[in-house]
Each structure stands twice: as structure tokens, then as C-alpha cells.
Image (tube, rainbow, N blue to C red; front, side, top):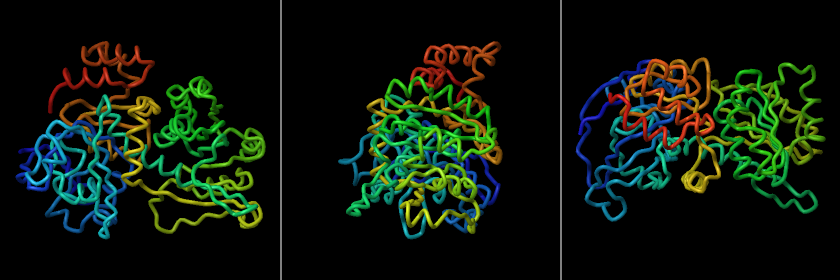
Length: 417
């Protein structure tokens, strides 16, 4: 079986190539990759090359396929595992194998990754429980499972303590107040969706420094939608406020129970502690690109006010399963997280452009040959292109959100690579 894939040969050296995959082994699975959601973690791996802890040292001779947020379907099953997996079955891959080597799909393997038309899944993925059945109605939601699973793990990572008996309760506080600092990006929008559909908080405050990003987020995850589910949702540009901490404490009536820090900036970490109420919990969710980032917090409050600090990175198969269930039950509006679509040929340039973050999630349709396109630009592009014109009609009818019908139309009518 031949595949087309974007492979990493070294730092900043990505190449779209066609090559033959090995024959499917007795304990392996061959999959057709339909979608892959591009992630900033891939940009970090591309920028660092083999200096990245997940990228092998010999990629110049044995290049790896990038992309770790894939969704597809099985096209061939090895003889020894035919009782467990079936041709035509939809799947997602949980890329965090938790191996001693640190190697994961999308970072470390020659023949499996999301930026490909076909991929060969090695036995270790099945052995670790990381090839997971998916029954969602579309593929793009499956590609968002990994990133949403990371955020879900973030919610599970919060904890609170009853200091009368020191009993600890895991998870964001039910009926509590949540702040998402630097939260108008894709992971922040995902956190808003999960806060409403999963965590059951009563107030969400999203901060950012970009008015455009905040406006876009508010148009996709609206305060009106949150209110229908019993939650107050507020978007605020803290760059325009003289004393942001004082304002946030006023909005939250004395502080937040839980705070996500979505951008790796020490000042945001300090702010997070300052806006916590007693027994509040801070999740420094953002992954720094540097290995020695120092931050500060008031240790008096850690001791006397019981402020907790955690950091969650990635997810585990349990989170993937839980996220799939939330998607299948319609508790997460995944279309709100998708800002762009693209084809395989546009992957490399799109990843390099992540040096300057823009939009939310960018979903690649591996068999389709289109440039990077913003969902909000479909109507304008449709003036001269029939494909985009029809997609714009479908999206408009769905409240401006990417959806199952749009995906089906694109897969049926889009140009093939």
C-alpha cells in the first residue's frame, strides 16, 4: 500500500512524499486517515527536530510521519487480531503511549501519523490500549478527541480540600467559578465547551489580549448558549483594564475556584494565584517551550488560603474514551473549535505559520487538495468557486460552524491529492 505523507527529516525540514508502507503484520492494523487536527505541539517538534524528547535521533535516515490528532477507518487487519478489530471500523489514536522511550505516534514512528493518507499502526499502540473505537457521525470530531481529552484531563486534575477533615475532592468544583486565562485560542475554547457540557460550573470568565480572538471565540461559544445551560460566560480583554486582578476578583465575587493558565507566561501564573479564592486551584496547562521557566506566587496564600497548583500534560486512554462519549452524546459542540480546513499539501506551511498563532483548530482532510481556508472566509471564496460556495451555504445553515454535512460534501466533491 502506498501512502502520501508529510515526513520530518530534521529541524524545520518537512517533506510531502509518496512511498510504500510495509505489509501489514499479523498484529498490526492498516488505516485510512481521513482527518488530522494540527497541533502546536507538532510545531514544537518540527522546530526542535531530534532535540525534541519525542523525536528519534535518526530521522534524517528514518523520517517520521508528523501529526497525532488523527481519525480514520480500518482498511486491513492483521491475522492475529481479527477477533478484536474489523475492516471499516472508525478509530482514533490516543498518542500518549507512556513508554519509557517517550516515543509516540505523530512524533516518533516512520509509518504512523496523522499527516498521511494511509498509516500502519504498530502492535504497541493496541497493546497500550491506544487504538480506540469511535462511532461519531463525522471524522473531524474524532480528530479533536486528543486535544479535548487533554483539556478533560485538565478538568480532572483540579482538586479541592475540605480543611475540616482534609478530605480531597478531585475535579473542578461543581457549581463553582472558572477562569480561563489566555483562553481565546483552541484549547481555551475547548475548555469552555467542556466547562458547560461536562464540568457543570456556574461561571466562566475567558481572558485574552486580542480583541479579534475574543470576538471570534464569543461568536462560536456564545454567552447565550452558556446561559441556556445555566452558566454565565464572560469574555474580557484584560489588556484594556488598568487593574485586571481587581476586576476579575470583582466579577467572580471574591475569586475563582479553578483557574486554567492557557499561555506559558509567568505573569499569568502569578495572576492565577491572585484571583483564586480560598481552596482555589490553578492548572498551569500551557506547555513552555523552554526548560527553565520561572514563575512566582504568594506562598503565604499557599499555606493559609490553601491555594493548590497542578500541571496536566496530555491525556490517557480513559480520557479519550470519556471524550468520545461526550462527543457522541452531543455534549460538546466540536464545530465551534474548528476555524480552518486544509488539505495534505498545505500542512507543512500551516505548521510553520504556527509561530504566529491564529484562529482555533485547523483540520486537515488528508485525501483532499485544498489550501488553508478559514471557515469564515468560505462565503467570500464562494463567489468564484462552486465547492466553497456550497460549503458556505451548509455552514451558514449550521450557525456558522463546521459540521457533518459540510464534511460529507467536501469529501465527496473536493479535489483529491
